[in-house]
Image 1 (cartoon, rainbow, N blue to C red):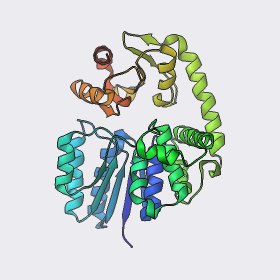
Image 2 (image 1 turned 90 degrees about the vertical axis):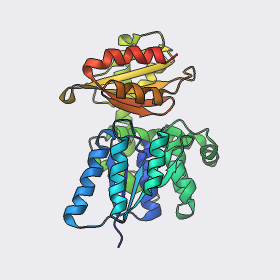
Image 3 (image 1 turned 30 degrees about the vertical axis):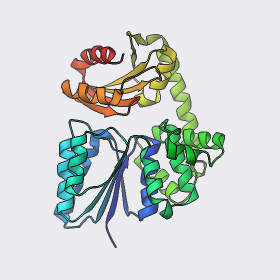
Length: 331
């Protein structure tokens, strides 16, 4: 039996759905869910463990895990080690990627599926749909919906196959299940397993109850911060002290403030850094992911993402400068 591993993003529907689709299509025996901060560490640990145990990894699928200037070269080097050890490496992603890194990945022999127009789950479904079911199409459509990419060509075709209200309900509940379970890896794995077995989000035991409780927490946080939002020329920002991910609150700040760009951050004391989520409205005419990737690198942090949705980790003492420059560049 071949040793097949999928490493996927744990923090949103696209990452979890990607893991479920890959598990279904390729019968992978190990799924590892990570956040951006721990991706390199997890990959490095996996390579070391493989060498030490002398257990060969035959295939590895890395899904929905974007790169930043801080980690992109090390990512290439780790994948090169895996390929030299006769492992087939597939990298499937939709985040903005430096052209040189893209070229380097192709040169070392990575099986690359990359494009920013559609989300990762859509890429996977479109490529491997002969190995997947109609329920898999639903899960990919849900991922596109929660990534705000449901109007893209392939995604819109999939979305149109299903009752839109049912899809929105299932996709939103799934998103809240995932967000509420970031410290419960067992439940995240239950979601992956259930989706890979053809279940829908409402079939996941206890899932809708988790989503309901999480929705109430989100609304409570939004109500509490409404009068604390800081307004700059192009940017609104606010700190939250909740256990909720910043990404669950930032779109509310975007709507409340009316600014082209919104930012929500949390201070992580153990690393003396700000964990940041950023969103742009249709009024935002710049590529926020590229700006944040470059800016965070200049300020000894890391970050990046999509045109209107991205994140960063910035040293606490450089946060004010980050806000100042991001506001200036968000015209």
